[in-house]
Each structure stands twice: as C-alpha cells, then as structure tokens.
Amino acid sequence: MKAVCWFGTHDVRVANVPDPTILNPKDAIIKVTLTAICGSDLHLYDGVIPTMEAGDILGHEFMGEVVEVGREVKKIRKGDRVVVPFPIACGNCFFCDRELYAACDNSNPNAWMSERAYGRPVSGIFGYSHLMGGYAGGQAEYVRVPFADVGPLKVPDSLTDEQVLFLTDIFPTGYMAAENCDIQPGDTIAVWGAGPVGQFTIKSALMLGAERVIVIDHVPDRLRVAQGQGETTVLNYEDDDVLEALHELTGGRGPDACIDAVGLEAHGTGLDAIYDRAKHSLKLQTDRPTVLRQAIQACRKGGTVSIPGVYGGFVDKFPIGAAFGKGLTLKMGQTHVHRYLRKLLAHIEAGDIDPTFIITHRLPLASAANAYSMFKEKQYNCIKVVLQP
Ligand SMILES: NC(=O)c1ccc[n+]([C@@H]2O[C@H](COP(=O)([O-])OP(=O)(O)OC[C@H]3O[C@@H](n4cnc5c(N)ncnc54)[C@H](O)[C@@H]3O)[C@@H](O)[C@H]2O)c1
Ligand SMILES: [Zn+2]
Ligand SMILES: [Zn+2]
Image 1 (cartoon, rainbow, N blue to C red):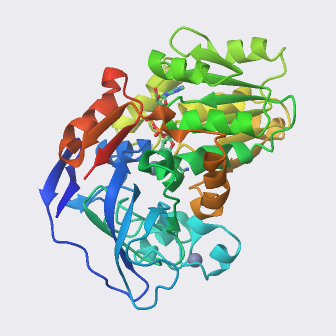
Image 2 (image 1 turned 135 degrees about the horizontal axis):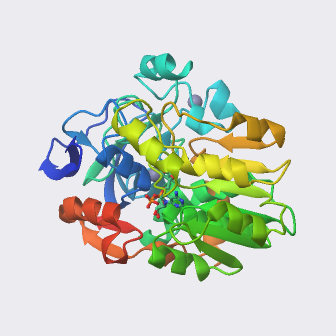
C-alpha cells in the first residue's frame, strides 16, 4: 500500500510499504477514506520530537471503513464507517476508567521510554514517534487500529467524511482547551494561535459561553477566519504589543483565561523570543515557551492558563513567580478524545458547528510532500489540508 513516511527533517515522502495485518484479536484494519495533516505533525516534520526513525508512517487524524476485525472485536464490524481518536486507549485501566484516555497505561509498548523521560509512561499515539509507541499512522491507504472496541466511533451516513474527520483530534482538542477554562458568563478568553486548533478553540469557547474571544497570531488569513467566528477581536503580534493590548482590551484586569494553542515552536519578535531561538538551535532547551510566558503574564489574577499546544521537554525562564503570585490554574495535556466523541458528534448533527470551515486544501495522498511544506509555510492561505488516499 501507499503511505506517507518520515525520512528526516523536512523529508516526507509517499512510499510503498507492506499492508497492515491483525496482530492482536482486539485489532481492526481500516481502509482510510480521509486523513489530515495536524500542527503536531509539523513538530515531527521539523525534527523537534525525538525517537522518529526513517520510514515511520505518519498521521493521527484519519477515518475510514472497517475492512477486517480481530476475533475479540464486538462493537464494530466489516463495512462500518468510523472515526478513530488519535490517542490509543485500552478502555480498562485505572486511567481509562477515569476517562483520562490519553494517559492509558496499556497502549504504549515503549512505555519505558516515556517513563524515563516523564516519570510515568504515557499512552500510545498513531504515527507519533517511538516514544509514543511506534505505531504506524493513518496517512496511508490502510491502518491497524488496536483496541478497536474502545476508540473507533461509527458515524452516521448523513454526515460527510469532511464533517466528522476532525472529531479524531482538533475539534475535541479545541473543546477540551476551552472546557479546561471553566468559562463563566461574561468571560473574556484570549487564544494564542489561529491555526486549526486555535480555530476550534475559539468556536468551543463561544459555544461554552464566552462573551468575547481575543485571538493572537500573525497570519492575516487565519486572523480573518477567526474574526468571522463571532464575538472575536484579533491581534497581530507583529504589529501590536500583545500584553499591552490585552491589558487595555480587558479594562486593566487581564483575560479570565488564556489559551496557548501554539506550543513548543512558537515564533516571536521580542528579546525573549530571540533568546529562545538561540537556545533552541544550540539544543540548550527543547521547547520555545514564548507564548506560554505571555499567557501567564497576561492572565488575570485567579484565572486559568490552558495549554493544548504541545510541549515535549524543558523550558527556560518559566515565570513561575507570576503564576504563583496571581494564583493561576494551569491545565494542559494530550486530549482525552474518546471522552468528547459522542457529545461533539451531536453538536455537528445538530448543526451547531460545521467543522469543514477550516479546510482550505483537498489533495490526493500522493501530494503529501507538497502538502506538508505548504501547511508548514502557510502558503496559498493554507489552514488545513485533507488528504485522500
Ligand atoms: N493537546 C493535544 O492533544 C493537541 C492536539 C492537536 C494539536 N496540538 C497542538 O496544538 C498546536 C497548534 O496546532 P495547529 O494544528 O493549530 O498548528 P499550526 O502550526 O497550524 O498553528 C499554530 C499557529 O500559531 C501561530 N503562532 C506562532 N507563534 C505565535 C505567537 N508567538 N503568538 C501567537 N501565535 C503564534 C502560527 O502563526 C500558527 O498560525 C500545536 O502545538 C499542536 O501540536 C495539541
Ligand atoms: Zn493532531
Ligand atoms: Zn487504558
């Protein structure tokens, strides 16, 4: 079959690889009908996530048709059309019982790696490095899905692939990022990053009752889409002093919650951003916390800083004093996608949201190399690319 494989930094190619097979009685094989490139894939593309190996199959946002199931799979069968959450969860451990699916104890065969790095093992993720289990991803014609009774959700025929695909990751991610802010009527929420995750975060914050969302980015098309979402105010961090603007827009109090939908590859124009770039390129720090610092600095006293943006290692000049002094709550992590699937599918069915609003490019899987570079460089107004095998 054909699959999008990682061969090194900025080297992604479609290659011929063996078809996946059932390895465990709880597996299913899915014929992928639609897949997407995520901002998280760009961290792999940029080579900032360790433990990738040449030839690894990428992709954790995918859906398709079940073509084969292992003998212990009961809830889905051949012919079903399903979306598949990006974290892999067993459904039975201490963490799955508490709906902390992205913390599943049983889905990462390389648990020892993350245990060494993070003190405790993290769950497996499709197509996301050997640290996350070394699973083949779904930017491919076929993919093996472990724990097939736990992750995949059947989707109604009345909805198109494009309408439901983002249930696999970025819609729940934006939703959890907003939910983590415990939004109250009248709240002002600031969101850094108007990429796909940022856009779903804005939508979710408004759905959960935010009075106003202030969005920070520097890509004009993305800010325009953010502006079209309703009660939003946009700031371009290249033109505006973000901290000063947030101060003024909130009457000197600061946003009630600040959401970092950018993560470890943040860009910036200030002195601290230059410092981060230098330390990052010398490998003296793994992540660039430009946005995280701003979010903590801007947030009102007693507010929440919610972090859907991915961080992987260590950061420098972390303003713990400001976070402590203002009594902030910090919430973060990989999304517990399974927890949100049914609820968000119901919102799509009810017409509360049409997730296709972020799709700017529809390409064949064979064009993956160009698609990655276009998405990374934000060329041709690119916000989200979907790929069809
Ligand atoms: N927590 C999870 O489970 C989860 C799931 C999906 C994605 N993510 C992460 O969410 C983040 C965003 O994903 P995406 O798909 O939207 O990626 P993206 O790369 O398309 O978007 C990031 C946006 O941040 C903007 N940006 C960069 N520096 C900035 C700054 N200093 N201030 C404001 N904006 C800035 C960029 O211009 C870009 O528009 C990534 O880190 C991704 O890995 C996390
Ligand atoms: Zn993702
Ligand atoms: Zn589990």
